[in-house]
Structure formats: structure tokens, C-alpha cells
Length: 249
Image 1 (cartoon, rainbow, N blue to C red):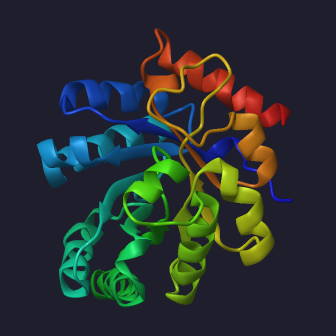
Image 2 (image 1 turned 30 degrees about the vertical axis):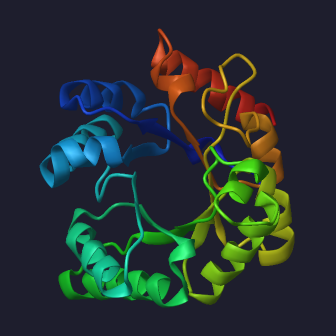
């Protein structure tokens, strides 16, 4: 089974404070593979804020090329609107973009095509486009309440297979579904995994969780880890502890 590497940790910076986000990116850049920026940050600062974080990461890593950023905006709309949204952010050259897999095959393919067309048109890195399956804040009870009368695991597998059929690069899943997805979809399908909580960190609003070591052994490609790193008194030290746990796995 493929193991996540040290470079597989994406630190989630979820704040509307641009200076704080830049400072966190600067401190964490040398310790992790990249940064995840989500809705809270992007709605407050948009493309200019993204570029500031990207420049901060590039300076810390002293590498050429686009910064390793997962732009976690979870697009979900009619296919034409999602395609337009992807074209709008593709010039930023994120490493990864995501859409909700529940938007359906036509929507996912529109996102994939828009990313590829933008990359070719402007000679840019094509972002990996992945599908969000079931949020890690949801469990079986939550799904039943919104009319999905199947276990979370089954829904994740169904949506992941649909994402594969739609020619996406991978999916976002909880760590509890990694093994089943690897068995069904193989090792060339990207698995990006939030819901990672070290034994020493609080679970918070996450429900389907694992430790970094457990997710590494299961075969995740990227581990998205937020509060256990960013809320710690020593974020870089916390990231180092998590990397050490992954390496030991």
C-alpha cells in the first residue's frame, strides 16, 4: 500500500486575517508540503490575498514555479457556472482545486475541461481537480437527515467512482474510506484527506477522523491538517511532530 510522504501534509490556514495567514504560511512553509486556503480566506481577500500567500510560500521554499496551494472552494453549481469559476481561478495556478462530486458528472467534466483549457491557453500548470465526496463533519445520522439513506462509506464510494468516470484527478474523503477507495480505484487516484487529528489534539467538529499515522498507513496522498497545527502555541513544532509521526508510520 502506498504511504503518504513527509511532503504530503497540507496545513489548512482558515482565517480572514491576511497578515496572520501570511505569517502562518511563512512559519509553516519549510515544514509542510503546502498550504490549504479555504472559503473564509478567499472570500475576504480573493486573488490578491492568494498571491500574497503564494509569494510568501515561494520565498520560504526558495523554489521556482507555482506555490503548492490547495484552493479549497468546493464549487457546486450548474456546469456552465462551475466551468466559469474554474477559469477565473486557474490563472492563480493552484496545485489542487475541488468541486462537489454530488454536482454530477456533467458538472465535474466541465470543471476538468475548464482547468485543462485554461492551462493550455495561458501556458500554466493545470491544477489537479478533485471531487468532494462526503464532508468529514457528517456521519450516517446527518446523511439520513438530508435524505441520503445510505451509510457515509457507501456514499463516498459511489461519488468517488463517479468522479473517476468524470476524469477527475481524485477526491476528498475522510481517512475512514481510504482503504476501500484504494482497493476499488487503485493507486493512481489522488486521495486528499481532511479529518486528521493526532492523539494529542481535540477532534472539534470532525466526526470521521484518524491519526496522521493511521491515514498514512491506509494510503492517503495528502493529509489536510488545520487546527492541530495552526491553533498550537508552536505551529511549526506541531507540524514537525505530525511529520515525525507520519515518517514513523
